[in-house]
Amino acid sequence: MTIDFADTTGDQLRHAAHTYHLELGWTTTVDGNQLALELDDDLWGLRMPTALAVELVAALRAMDFSCPVVDLAEPSVVLLEPVEVPVSTPRLPAAVGRLPSGCRVPLPPSVTGRGPVRWLTHEPDGGRRPSVRVVTDTLARLIP
Picture (cartoon, rainbow, N blue to C red):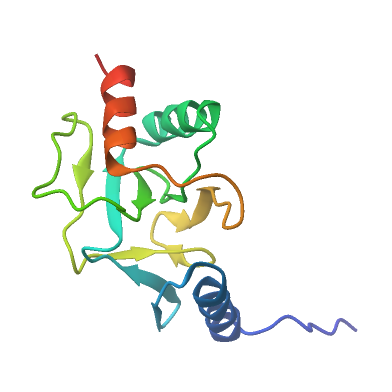
């Protein structure tokens, strides 16, 4: 006889939502089997190919920066909290797009039609957060 003591999916998602709120101050929503973060002017999402996101994370780490990156099984979404207030979205390479305010980004432990959502990188207590300018300048160096 096997007894499964695992929480239900809803319990896991609510627990993760609470953790994101405590660790990062993020307000998330749980809808069915999805935990999502709604983007706004204080939290940006930059959509890019996962291979580019991996290169970006490595380049940022070399400069002692870190930021959360959600892997959605292609593409990935880099989450930024802009400390400076740009008048408009900075120029981004063609392979990168800023997701609009109000867009909802699934967070782990959600599962989408493409499979489980996972963190490519997620270090709530470590590293300095890069500015939008640092990220865009780094992307410009990675994509000539």
